[in-house]
Image (cartoon, chains in turn green, purple):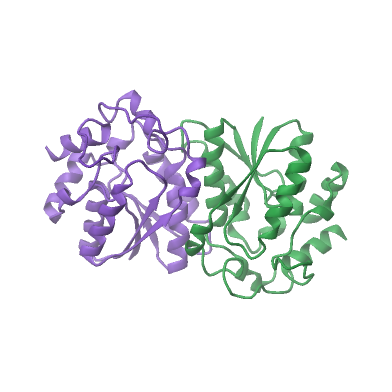
Length: 205
Length: 205
């Protein structure tokens, strides 16, 4: 199977990258520079792909930043601290982000003759991010199947797994978690306090 | 109703712009510079919006051009001549274009507090463009309703109309067709031979 992975450089999508390779897929990665505060995740993504010998495109979509306002990840609004599922984490929702990423990845998949687009959304995302929920993935699968002459699948194998379970899969696959980046703040060191750091800490225990 | 129109500057979306204004909608337009050969349509779009006093954003998505390869509209492949519904017009299909445009417009609609995204796909598009067909619009409506905290509609009122019927609506609304741009080639004058010109000529009779 030829799979194009939407790759952030974080622990979930890195684990999915390792899993796809272990499953024998022909894998290629696509990352997006959308003016995110934690842009350093892209450098982490680039390094992992380089080490694994996986082709990787970083697509500059900063011109879309003006469309995706209102989020702490794409503007001057401070990144909230606390638990990943807390109400204030809604400030990190980027308008329509996953639909945009999936639709762009689909265009590249078609151009390259790939059969599916993969992403590492998981159960921990469901509380806060509508575009990580099972119903969203189902409906994207429905439209991806008919939107072009090429029938594409949207593959989200971690959809109902917790981040702890993903960590378990990653350990079995030998994922180098220390080479992945999660923190939303994107400073020199992970802050340890944003929702993303807190959730990662719980998962990696 | 606050409606964000995906606006190309051609006769169909210009007619839809006039219709939305006549219906009393609060309208704003969004156009995309995706490296299309007929980029001059953007200048036509800008002028019409200016004359009507409608807010208009032209979003530079040329960095996405590398994702949307394989089409005569985004590469060096010659634009085919003939009838709009001919088999060779498939060379003008841009991978996943309408899903990308709708998902980007949705992000802006959410950022601005708008309630729906409109586009002027019509029955003449169905033969060649999968992402203009009723099933595509239905499935995009299904996902647009649940992908974000804000429930959005995808409004395509010309979906089952012929281009001739759109021309009729446009005439009644006083659309200045001479100020719209249709030709795929984007030269100084319309070529009169590409599918888009042929279809326009038939519709305007």
